Image: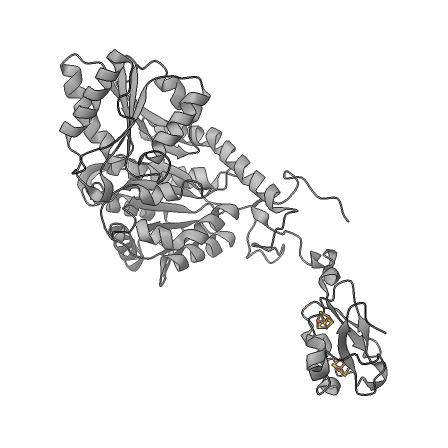
Length: 395
Length: 116
Ligand code: SF4
Ligand code: SF4
């Protein structure tokens, strides 16, 4: 039997980790992920998990230990934020290229500088080409559910790629919400036992990880990695479908909220999607045909499916919580990728970008409403007046 | 050179899944210097065999003799010449063009192509 608990986002992730009971967790505490590591350390101390918990001296070491343990055949998890991910950098790429199915909870926080501890998506967006599968979570329940699914996605023999599960720092990581916690046995049955095909500890078939690949083999190795991402396009919906059935959920590649008959929509990830739903409901009550698309799977990027879901609209606003510096007037990465996806699939809907919430700046329903009102105007005129808008920045 | 494999044929993650296949990689081509063996001075202490990082010291195990180098794999690092007790003082003159049978030498390094 599942039960409802009041959990912070960090605690929800720690709970999933307790139920998964990974072989190895190597992590270093960093705000706002710290609670996850604290709670998990407690589970280790209380004997609630049998995990080897490695307290490392830095995130670089954390990811290095994760790669080593994963290569040795262990089921491995970690958690970090912002500067922690930045310090892991070189090993983040190596984890993906060695095809280590590590699961990481990434509690999104702005990258320095200026130094800041609050939410934005600059940390994950910097890692978007690192070869990790990336999932977004609107709330604590989704963070919990995504972590459980991530294990299965990562370890699928056709995938074998690491997965990052994102949630918004403080906004969900430190907010207590009602979370349906499934029965331990059900979670364990869902994730199953990890049986790696190869392991560094298998003395009967000795092997090497990390050998030099020159111009003669490097590209072939990368080609395989690209293929694994393509396999993930098939595997993620399979795992999600099984999860939905077993735990009575309704996840997809993204969530389409009141989108089918909408004229205009906002595309926004993580917690802000929750706020946007309230705005959608209130505008709908006024008879305005507005909807929302909330990306869940960001890597692999479901370009075709997104294009199809947005094709019927008259105006689209992307809301980005980070800047892709130097692309276009301070536009964000979600906008870049989505506009490319739409163009590629012949969707020519007027589109604009709103960059918001950097460094944890609050995003109010009234501001999201102003975005919808802009888009309703665009839908009428067919003309985007301002391609990129920095939302609520003081002049 | 062996035919290069396609991306579907190689182990995933850049792993090497057969043990001991380094022998297939002919590192001898990297060599800028070449060790030269002065058989007459050799005391067959096997220091060179012990220290060579590329397993390139050829030995006659039965008779417990050092017999030469596997130049297909020797990278010319000079470690053998450096650890050879007979050669200890000579290695400092590695830059000199000494003849192959200089009486002071057990092993010494000479420039590839300039060996006499
Ligand atoms: S030069 Fe280096 S690689 Fe060559 S035999 Fe001597 S120790 Fe081995
Ligand atoms: S170290 Fe010198 S003396 Fe000893 S076996 Fe090798 S070549 Fe001979």
